[in-house]
Image 1 (tube, helix red, strand yellow):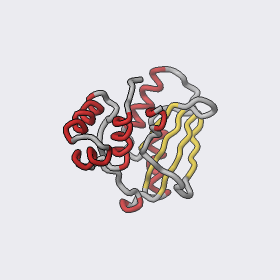
Image 2: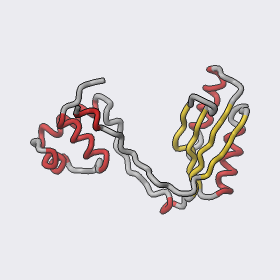
Image 3: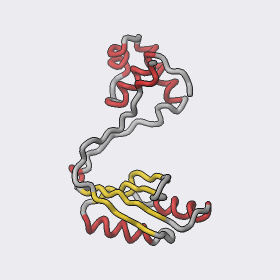
Image 4: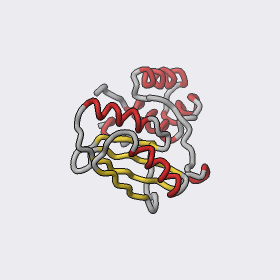
Length: 157
């Protein structure tokens, strides 16, 4: 892991909450000149620490009212099956997160849809992707915490 100083930490902290901050305002908030701040942001982008900047959309405002966590168990643990499964899942825009897991669940998917009928449509596409041993769906009742910000406290120690 690359070393990050106090200013890198402050830049990353600020950009995680407001990526659209003008460089001049960002520089003022963290106590650097505009040029020095811009160079640091550019270096963080070029090194891959800042992967990209996006707009975070409100699911409810867009009619995406149901979040489903889908646990997948498979009897197949080989590269060919995983490649087929991964490509099929990546092709489903409703799947917004996709993880290979340890423990009882082999894969965990986060799916965002309009309603239960919409999820049923996605489910039918999902089970057609590759053979699976078990697919279990859990519907989120309430979002208590959701953040895109990573913990950065370990950087300034």
